[in-house]
Image (cartoon, rainbow, N blue to C red; front, top):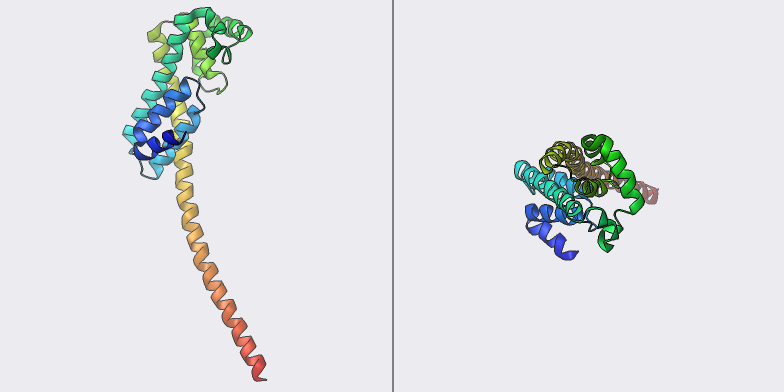
Length: 196
């Protein structure tokens, strides 16, 4: 984990890309968190918007496509694979296959935005032998909304931190001035009280 944070700090574009790939294959780096981080880095001028958005868009599509390829390669026996059994059980696969047969494209468009369902849907798209071109076009279109929302949240959060920082500085100045005034009043009060 420290190595990843070091990569993100020193090489933010590569770091964001790696986080998305690792998160996509099931390691504990959630896609949404990485996208929010991207927005934050854009707002704090650590990364430039266009290259950062290109990097996260590529990372998302590659990570999703890896899951699709795994589903296509292993087919239904994926549920017996120890790594993927945690992601997709036999019952879940059957249920998702039924929904996928009825509305495959719509299922990807909507399911991509549901955190717990995302990886399962991409695996099932592969298991169901969906056309790679159709999968990529659908996923590419749907990903635009995910990126816009999550990067936007991070960007607004970063700007909010700047505003809070400025407000805190302003509050600190007012507090210092108030303390000086109160101290002066107290000292004057003590001075005149002793004189009496």
